[in-house]
Amino acid sequence: MITNFTKSVAGAAIALAFAGQVAVAEDWRGWNIHVEEYPNTIAMDAFAELVSEKTNGEINLQMFHGGTLGSQPDAIEQVRLGGLQIGNFNLGPIGPIVPAANVVSLPFIFKDVAHMFRVLDGEGGAAIAAGMAEQGLTPLAWYDAGARSFYNGDRPINTPADVVGMKVRVMNNDLFTGMIAELGGNPSPMAFAEVYQALSTGVVDGAENNWPSYESTGHFEVAGFYSLSQHLIIPECVCINTDTFNALSADMQAAVREAAQESALMQRELWTKREEASRKAVEAAGVVVNAVADKAPFQEAMAPVYEGYFATNPDLRPLVELIQATD
Ligand code: BDP
Image: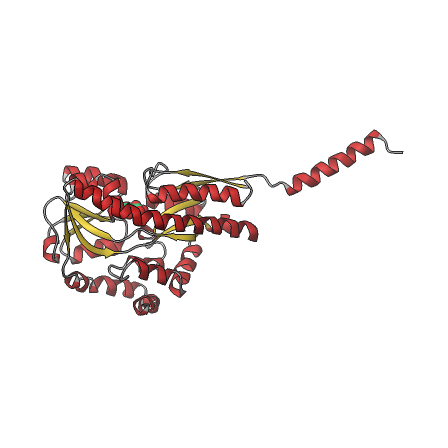
């Protein structure tokens, strides 16, 4: 005879079996420094949606844009420690933590963006990704950040002599302070959010960035000479806390990685369009743009920066040579 008691025990057992299969949704928080409509912002929102779709709602990523969760160096630490799970980071400020990833911050290391992606898609990219994962930042996909050029409020920069005495804001990384010092300028590492104010009050004379950031931050309003030095071509990652990633099942890992890679395809397309739109917008606003006819003197001045990097990281010389030998 099946008693009510037996029935309810059986019912509870079935309910428990279901509960075992239905995982509790994981809530992740993601950091991004850029404003609305910026290619990375749109792509990171798409990433969040794709993550939810591809994991059947088991992972819920909430994105925080505009650097509201802190400066980039702080957010990098947060993702490493697991206080945040996701970040769209530039590899510039990751370099001080991951020597192999710092290779992309050597001035003039890449010929152009296409060269950078060829390196990232090969052995070089694997070495960089492994170094990052070891330090708690697992890259899921690479975003485009174009080429960075100098801008300031005084004069076009055509030769290193034009940088002499100039106070130039850089991202947090000794390679960048070294770069400005070798050109005869005074480097000033500073958080991105502080640069507009610093330019407008004369705390710094200039800075360096790609077209979309020069435009979206309004820096062009207070530093109207943009000189196409294109001295840095630095990729960006969609990075995840390594422990968070490793704790996922293989299927979930694949879903999250796929979502990031799809968002990267979107970001790269949006990026190309935005570079053009930003250039046109600042030109229309009266920015004086100059090509740098001869980049060789800038490149030659970087020899001590490379030597310093090799002195600290002798084991990374082959990685630099691999990049230089990649067509
Ligand atoms: C932008 C990068 C952003 C950096 C910023 C900077 O996308 O990650 O924080 O430059 O110069 O191009 O700090």
